[in-house]
Length: 401
Image 1 (tube, helix red, strand yellow):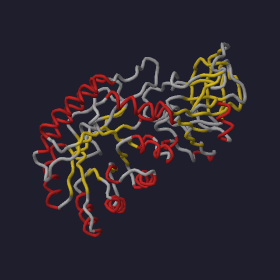
Image 2: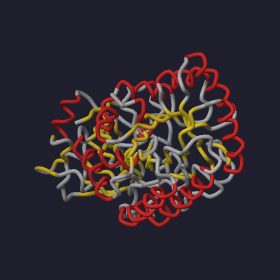
Image 3: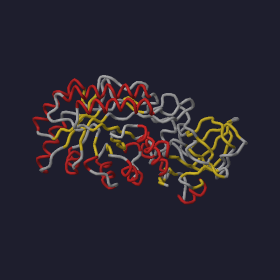
Image 4: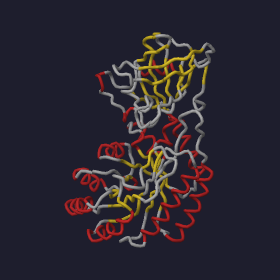
């Protein structure tokens, strides 16, 4: 991919050629995340969006501790989805004032940890009101809360819909007035609203429309809130290109739309911050997955490169993480980037299942045992969403370079 340079026919990641990087890692397979690309993406985003926008990193996209530490220094906050992620965020130096916790099914212990840490909890059910009130009383600390709203609309053209219709996420918009009353009666420290309509969207018009509708809904609900609104989290949804025909997201219309929202918020909710919560968009382009060819075989005319990595490390690239029709992630032979001798091959892993396919019938440089296969767009939803214990093979390494 164009974000990674090529030197003497080799891919360069983090300023290091791939064969040297593999030697530094000590073994394959591994994920490598490029610090400079992470920083560049945040800088580009800051330039395109209004300066008043607060940018949060949704660490579910990639919870590697070193990467989270890097992102904590670049962004205005961290959004977590479990007590485990909360601990990583705190260890990374994120300020509790700027950490929020979303997710259905929070346990009593997790809620107590959140209140003790002083972070913002996004309420996702009526059950959580009583648990937060109990934790607040027991600890003698205010329970900071926002309401995660499940709107009646969804983010059009999104890869994964997180709002609209029946959902396990948040509280249906029509039930929020009752929930706000319960929050007030319980004496919780209400701060705002969280609306996340969908993810992985490459259409700026759809994202802008969802943001406008989310903001309008927040304005409507704010009139019923027990305290002045201090924060409106409009979610994310920003996508990255994975497949042929995908085009990078145009941030221009999104920035213009957010400028209009900021202006209106300044008039109607002068104490409220507008937050954008992004995960994949911040880290996805900056990562690669690297595995090594350990065998080359031909079966009835079809060539297979058998690698030491597979779906147990990179479930998404295998097509088994939400794809309806399997498509190849961008891939390359990382130590043969300038080779002109090519062939059509499939790259498969070592697992005893036909699902273990990283690349299916793609034109790549002719590769042999020892060569390095690279799967691009692997900085998000890689190692942490993959079944690494399946069949007992070693886990992939993760390095930040």
